[in-house]
Length: 318
Length: 257
Image (cartoon, rainbow over all chains, first blue to last red; front, side):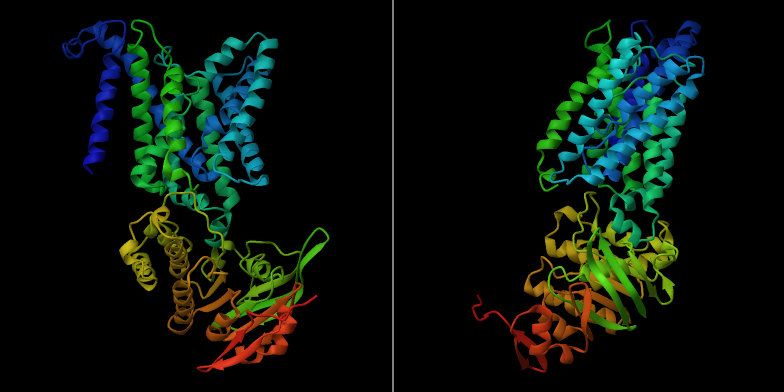
């Protein structure tokens, strides 16, 4: 309980720090004194950014947890299962073929592609012998790279490499009021997983367990993957992908509480949001006044964490 | 009562279960025995509707396992396969509590709590309830899985080679447990066994399969004969009655060419 309280306290501290870190001078004193410029800055830029980081971090972490349960593998997450790459491809296709459609429509196309990518990943997993737990992320990364190569080629031909870079590297520096609200939907979808936590956990025990307990395995699989796909598409289109977050947060939560999703989801979301805040904040501070995007920061910190988990002894047995 | 009517299972040209007709009575322990590749596990898995059959029909208390609502079946019949690899980090209590899923769908009632506690107690796992499964020994984990099935509280319990990976003490414990489930709780146990002597000592009925067919069935005394053993396993077995149980001794076979 005290550890939970400590985690919440650190999270709140990071959130407050995120509100007041930036190039323009904004102090808590000025806001409390009612300085209109300060309040305006807070409401149009700083608060939206902080909220966006929290929502994206929390939902990506939950999506990662769902992916890990359904793929029955600790190393599966949207960016190690081809899901992110498929979402980018979808976004690219939508941009090319439906240029006049609103963002929400393009996002739905991206979500459909992401779902197909996740489904393809699960389909491949079902057909190959999983001799080691490491095969799963390797399959996902290869699948992702194949999709990514096709995406890059198309983007290169149509001069859209810049847009592609925006989707594939998470960055919160352009977040303003009115440009991140889709993330509320992403977070709501991820939170929906909490209400179906038992079903998702049972599905995580495998098909035979699920059928024995009378659960419609395929339906739960489709439901879970749909949440992952929607969340991925929304995050990719609004801020770009944040690699490794969906891997790090659920694994840390699992070490503390285990994988019963009813218990693990709140902590996973909190850790995901906290890690995202920390990386975003660090990215704003290390090269001040310039920014390093969260995608890069998380790539560095997350890959170290990933290696630590890979070499950790509790995964050796699979 | 489990009625198996002309059930077949083939994979391409290979037929693993060839037209099995069999009625398993309600109550007691039924052991399915036979050599490797006889189709025992396949048949059990089809009864538990984890595997579709190529043709035929299986009825459990009149419910067709292929068409009945899976959720309704889950309150009647439970099945535990041999390889139960769980990647998720769950506590013993979590796993056992999921046995209540068909009854409560995750919202555990007080009654469910009683079932969970009773199943833990029944398997001697109460002191390990809050441990994670990956921290347990193979035997303890096996018992945790059985506890989940006990907690599911179905009339029919199907177990596929539950003695795998268990040492002698735990194997005996598992067989005693099946007896208690049948005698004290009135469950119907159907179990695939490789150890013929365990089947002889603990089962009420033995069904012997070979090459996808049922070739013998009856009480242990009727199956535990040298003739039947030769027909089933192709080995010479010396049957001895020890303490009222018929025990087969087969460890030394005459050299064959």
